[in-house]
Length: 538
Image (cartoon, rainbow, N blue to C red; front, side):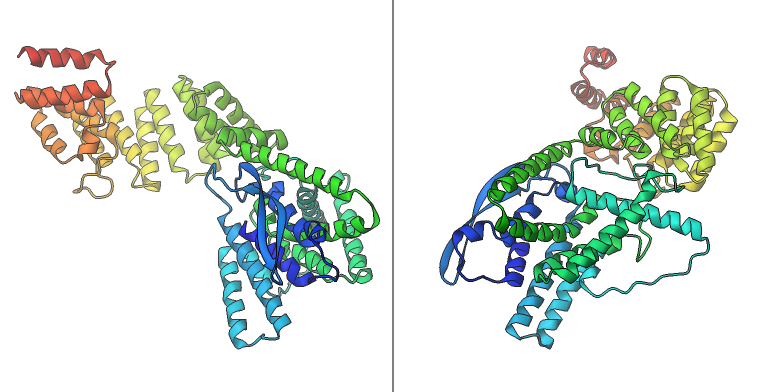
C-alpha cells in the first residue's frame, strides 16, 4: 500500500493539476489508474502474498478541498513467509527518492542538505536490494566476443528471456514460482523458434525510440526509462545473474509498465467512449487472477502443483513437489516426481539422494545404492549422500564398506550427529558394544564432548538401552539427571528406559513416575503397562 500511495503522489508531482480539474477527472486520471493497476498486478504475488480483495476510500485534501478517491487494492495478509521484503523496501525507498528529488526541483531547494537526504534514501534502496542502484546513473561495459556464433545464440537467449519478462508484465496469465531448469529454453540453433526473439526485440526497441522522439510526454518518458533502468540489473547485461526469469524482480519495473498503461488509457479515453468500462473489466480480471495466484501460495503443495502446470519440464519443481508429497505420506507420488526430476536433470544429486531414501525404506537396497553412488559421482562432497550410502550398505550387511562411507561423511561434516548415531547402530549390529556406546555418546556430545547436547534423542535411547544391557543402569540414571526436563518428559521411549533402569536400581517410586509419564505420552504401547504393573505389584 505504501508503494501504491507513493506512486500515486509521484505521478501527481510529475503531471501536476490541469485546468478545469474535477472529481470525475480525478477518478480516471493517470495517477489513479497507474496506482490501481500497480496495486492489483498479479505478478506482485510472489513479492507479497495477498488474499483478500477490498475496496477502500482514500481521503485527502488538495488546496483545502476534500476529494474522495475510489481505489482498488488487495489487502495484505501473509499466508506464507514473505520472500519479497527486499522488493517492497527497495520500491518504497526508490519511489521516495524520486518523489523528493522532483519536489526539490520544483521548489528550487536542491541544496547540499536535500541532496544528502536523497543520497541516504538511495543508499537505503540499494541496501534493500541491488535493483535499487538503478535510481543512480549506470554505466554499461562490454567485452569483445571470442566466439561470435555462441555470443549470438546467447544474446538471442537473453532476448527471449526479456520477452518472457515483458509478457509477464503485460499478460500475466500463467505464473510460476521458479522459471529455472529448462522452464525458459535457450537458443541452440537458428531453427529454434526462440531465435525470432532477437529481431522481435529489435522491433520493440525501435518502436520505443519512435515513441520517445515523436511523443513529447514527460510522464510517458518517465515510465519507459524507469521500467528499463530498473530491469537492467536482472537483464544479464550489467552482470551475470543466477536466474533466468523471476517474478519478484519485476516488482519495480512494473511501475514503468503501469505508468505507460495509464498514459495510454488517458489518450484512448479522450478519443473513445466507454473506455472506463473496459478498464474496470480489466481490473476485475486482474484482481481475480491475483486472488487465484494468492490462493496457490497458501500451501507448498498448491504452489508446486501450479508451477508444474506452467513449467512441466522444470526438474526443480518435480523435486520440490516430491519433498512435499513425501512429507504428507504420499510415497508413491514422491517417488514418481523424484524419478521425473532425475529424468529431466540426470545429475540432480539431491533428487537421487531423496529417492534413494524412499527405495531404502521399501527394501530396494541395491537400487538405492546405485542412485547414491551416482549422486556422489555428481557431487563428491555430498555428505548426506555418503551417510545414506552407509545406511544402505549396512542394511545389505556390507559393514566395512558402510563404515568407510560413514567416515567419509564425517570427514566432510564432522559435526553430523546422525552419522555418529548410524555408526553406533553399525557397531551394535556387529557386536562391538563399546564402540557403539562411544559413537552414540559422540552423537549427543557433538558440539562439545564434555557438554551434553541432548537434541539427538534416538542416540540417547539406543545408548541407554545398550548401557542397560551392559548392566550399567547407574550411568543411565546419572546421565538422565543432566537432561533438560522438557526432553526427558516428552520422549516416551527415553522416559520408559530411564524408568526401567530406576526400577533395576530399586528406586521404585521414581520408576513408577517415569513409566506413568511414558504411558501418558504413548498410551498405545502395551509394554509400558506391563512394566508398570510389575512395579505396582512390588
